Image 1 (cartoon, rainbow, N blue to C red):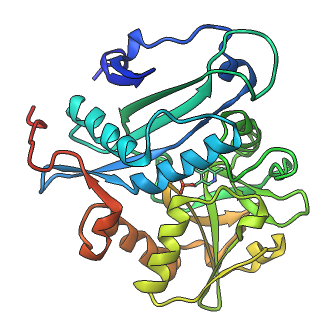
Image 2 (image 1 turned 90 degrees about the horizontal axis):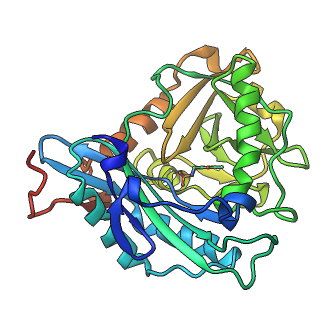
Length: 315
Ligand code: PMP
C-alpha cells in the first residue's frame, strides 16, 4: 500500500496520510518538543491474526514521556490501545507492522518552552519487516558520543529532540563500518544502543544496565528479563556495567521493539564469545519469537488481537 493512502489518526480524527499535515513552524518540529512510541505488530498467518505487542506498556510509557514534556494526551491508555487496533484494521494489514504514536507541541510560533503551548497527537501505522536486515551477529562500536544524562535531558522519556543523541552515535558507527553503536553514560558506564537496550551474559548470569545508567526503560528489555527468569531460569542482575566487561562477556545482545533481539558478534572489532551466536542469546531469540507470535499461552496478556472475530482482514 502506498504511504499516502494509509489511514492515520491526527488531531482527533482519522484521515489519509497525505491529508494530515503540520505547519512549517510547528513547535515540535522546530524544537524537538514531542514524544513518541515505537510499537510492533506480528502477523500470525495460521490464525490470520495480527498480534499487537505490549500496547499498554507502550502507552503507559508515552504517558510518562508526555508528563515530563508537560503534554496532555487526549486519550487514556485503554482508548489508545483500541485506537491502535482500529487503525490497523482500517488499513487491513496482513503482515508485520510498526505503529508510531506521537504527541507534540503544536504552536506555530517562535519561543522555546514547554508551558503554555498547545498539544497535538497523531498515530501512523505502516507495514514493517526488519530493522536490521540480518540474522547474523551485529558488529558494534563503542560510540565517542556519550548518552544524554538525566540532568540534561531525560533518557527515560522517548523525546523526539533527544534522538539527535542516538542519530549522532548511529551514523558515526555505520560510517565507521559497524552495524550499531553502544553509548557510554557521561560517567563512562555502558548505557545503551541508539535504539536498543544492552544485555550481557557472563558465567551463566544475565546482566543489563539499571535505569540509573540513563537508559530508555525498554518494553522489550522488561519482556526479556521476564522470559529469562521464568522460561530460561536465569539469574538477571541490573547494575552498572563497565566498558571492559563487554570485551570479556561470554555473550552480548541488544533488544528493542523495532530491532527485536539481535546477538552481537563483535565490539570494536573484538569477537565476543568466539564470534558465534551464544546459547543463551539463541534461546532468548527463540523464546521471544514464540511469545510475540502467540505460541506461548502464558504470555497472551502481552498481545492484543487486531481482527479477533471481525475478519475485516480478508483482501
Ligand atoms: N533505547 C532507546 C534509545 C530506544 O529508542 C529504544 C527503542 N524504543 C530502546 C532502548 C528499546 O526500547 P523498547 O524495547 O521499548 O522498544
